[in-house]
Length: 248
Length: 318
Ligand SMILES: Cc1cc2nc3c(=O)[nH]c(=O)nc-3n(C[C@H](O)[C@H](O)[C@H](O)COP(=O)(O)OP(=O)(O)OC[C@H]3O[C@@H](n4cnc5c(N)ncnc54)[C@H](O)[C@@H]3O)c2cc1C
Ligand SMILES: Nc1ncnc2c1ncn2[C@@H]1O[C@H](COP(=O)(O)O)[C@@H](O)[C@H]1O
Image (cartoon, rainbow over all chains, first blue to last red; front, side):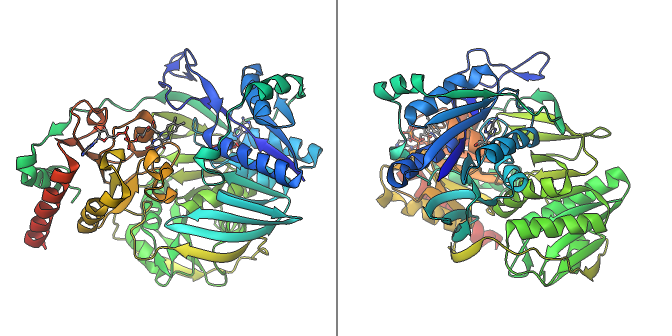
């Protein structure tokens, strides 16, 4: 089985979000970039398929040279090879088209992507990629087993979960639950050394046009001060929630 | 030309998100000077959507249960039939599942997590949340057909005195490639996705045996229960209750945080909630800076009194 794990390169969750160039660009100053958390769960699940079922695992990112450190980290965790499509990601559709080419050329059976990336929160690349590459698609995937050509997946739904069965080729939008938090891997020294020798292929992009343009960013308006209520005046709190906030 | 909304139902009843996308769709249709069509699957009373501004409802009675690919393709057929230039879906798990498939079918640019009516119609520009609610972006959609995913609770329900014509619609249904083996849905519980109020507990509650006060507070308010990430990692509560940047997003009217410090990753996921009430022993807890109302105190003392006061309030306002 050939597995491709899509890795988006995102600001660390503790990052302060600021904008530059007249609020048109994300300000990367002082920002640490990491593997998108949803993709980290997917990558760890892929390692299981590699170790237990002999799958080969490649990772891919659509992005500039600055994302190579993130791809190297994925190699250090255990991926066999990495691919970088050398173009700046502009929107979900453009990224999905670039990835669809990689999937087709590499004849991957299973593509593991994340439910969403925590930067632009598009939640669109995996589904678009599935449709473009003619694969089946399971989103919000919290469990995945593969036997031959057959996949059994658990999808989180509003208020519960469902168990689904489908066939390869398959794309999933994965998240926590695919593996447990405590199973996430941190690269060790040996992994880091080995990663240096693994292939990181840089591919030229298709240069498709973006279908959206982001003109400007704004930050939420600053909040007013909190109204503190004393434990002896909780009836006042109930009243305020009713008459002022109108939420009960 | 028209605007098309996909209105979800469960067991024949429209979900609240369906009424919200209808209300929002009406505003967009007015902005564009056109009419609003809704696509429903097996709705018992499709004409009900007239109360939220829908002019025409296409009701598909032939489809079986939800399948993202099959539904996306049926929505595309409806969009073609109605010559819809703007197609709108909600942010439910099912809508977020089918939307990217639909975008490819429609050859449409897709903006998810949209929080307001378009700021401009030419170029068609929407405000959407990004960086898990730490910011917003203004994004233009440059394709002929545009697809919008509306953030939950971002627009609200707007009643309308209009009435809707209804029509049976029989799209060609694709074969499903995904078979549902089993569904495990807790029917007696309010879900985080649907809840108007969410009561959430953190590590300050010390252990799973103390969750009774959270559940009781939620019950009095008709609220869903949620928790911080460490609480689910520790196995005190199920993963499905984990909210935050790496968990479920919460966009309720009221979010009550009990014994949660207010870490940046937690706040990112719940920021879209309209009103926040924080109960914490530590006056320096960062959550107070993000809260509207706060009680500095021990949850084990504060919550039981709050439950009593709410019960009194309920009995007086029943
Ligand atoms: C990559 C990454 C992603 C993350 N994603 C998320 C996420 O999605 N969601 C999330 O929640 N976290 C997330 N976190 C974790 C986050 O950083 C915090 O560690 C976590 O939110 C803290 O949970 P807590 O507030 O329950 O616990 P603590 O930080 O331990 O806070 C407990 C609070 O309870 C108060 N308290 C103690 N006793 C009482 C009492 N008797 N009554 C009232 N108050 C009391 C304390 O004053 C304290 O403020 C993430 C972290 C990382 C690194
Ligand atoms: N630039 C990218 N390169 C590779 N994979 C990506 C990229 N952007 C998004 N993805 C994948 O698609 C998932 C969802 O991303 P998004 O649609 O941007 O929310 C991510 O978790 C990744 O798995």
